Length: 250
Image (cartoon, rainbow, N blue to C red; front, side, top):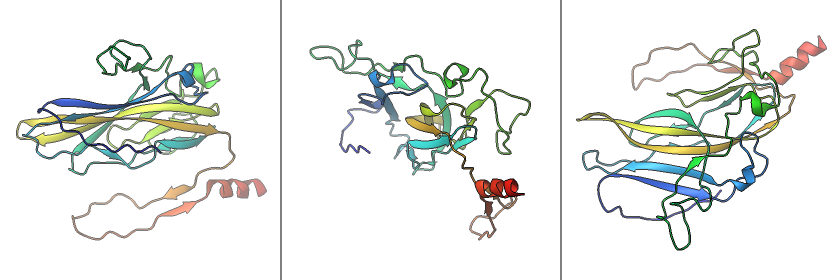
């Protein structure tokens, strides 16, 4: 975990981009070519506008790292929050890099010192058949959202625009995968609903072969609640692996 602390005074009210370039990605990322020779680029876009008042960028409280199992549905939620109560929207995007020597990048004796990011070389989403090692990666049974489509439906890799939850149904080939998504920040003001900023996250998923199964949860049904009232309910869980072992013994 690298933490960088700095202060900067912006000269005027307008939109700005704050970015970070890391050299280099780890070797062997399956959904891009030659990953150890590609840089790592992320950015935050902010808008300074007196009409908006105070604004703080969204915070993603879940780590930018997760693990998945082959042949099982992978779920990840970035746990985004906004201190100002602004609405957040999530959208998948390509992992980005800033090639060395590209005009406009950090070049000794020249350039504008403005990064010119572009998609990582041969980047593909993790469910793409060309990088999974399977001719036709398919979905596995799943009762969540999006619902499993039986009959050998193609594997999916999607993100819910409202909740931010990522669903990969289902990983086929073990290894390292990198994904990226944009978190847009929206605010309602006197001039209407405006997009006032965005944050790009680039994260890694490590897929491993495993016989362990996630627990199955039983939660109370949806209900309407008046703000300020207390809600009580019972959530139960049954371990998937233990349940499978029981069936095997029978």
